[in-house]
Image (tube, rainbow, N blue to C red; front, side, top):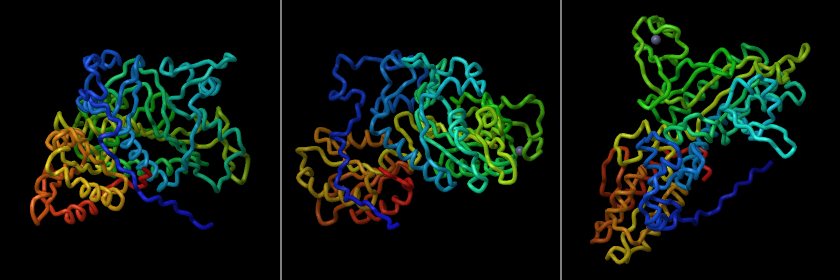
Length: 468
Ligand SMILES: [Zn+2]
């Protein structure tokens, strides 16, 4: 089949003057009477993080009214979330996983069959339909995907392993919402489920998917540790957690001083046993706090047995599938990355691949001498936004703000690169632009061509599979 590519010319301009970004103190969005409102009170969140506060103040996210632990993701946050999900899709594709979408509402009967309806307790949110049938607003989908497979013929041996994932909103009725998107009641999660013939095959799949997780966190370029995890109510007997070390983390980790591998303290029966399970060294454990952002489980036949997901070995009767499940907390990764990378209380620091825009171009204030050359700036913007960093450039064209104000705000937002059309561009024969790099916190004075060459190189650091 001939491939057909749809390439529309990029004519769109991302303009700050009309971008929906309700910042704190912006009179356009906050009439004086409302300005004093405190989101923490109405949102029931008593713990404050600087990164969360910046996301709220800069108009990236907004708490839902009278719905604790629920948030609106506004355009800036969605740009970043879309990049993050694009990166996850790219990694999943590399490892032959196929994307699906499962229903959010799942029948309570399935949860009874797996015996989790009661054991998950009040964290499961339930609703009834008009015929009085009970449904669960799913926090996870082992039951529903196992039953989906189980309702068809046994999976043929040569198609194994089957690896299906989705990236969808999930609901968990948290007793205590905390730290904004890090512990919210509605969150975005990537959940993958795998089906194999034998335990040996399932362990191979388990190792492969753990490699995929390592690769993902390395690409994202955030500091992380993989530790032996607690299996909780998933019911398997092998699991690993991916944790971002942070003092605000809710998990206690024991990390081996020699091999830097470790475990969640909950799986350790005794702190006094100094022997590392991995390297057999007897160094003392180092204690760290971590934010759990990913979890892999070997499930065995825990779900396939009761919900009838079968595989066909080809030389005998169908048998229950050997399963694994693999989660990534997408909205939690978004928020926790900002928290662990934060070095300055007045700036967001992004993993470069998921910054909402890779570049912002600052135009001079209306009425200034430089404003007469606005057409030059638009031409520069259009070239960079269509050719060098496609669809990934913001133009700060607000005509009531000085360059100084715009630069301060651009640094607070944390754009990886900022280009300033200042006085040096307009005087004389040797026009130069200011190019600021957030990573190095330095400014270079370069000719427009040199800036373009630099940005062309920056393009290679952008998110793969960017479908914005
Ligand atoms: Zn060790």
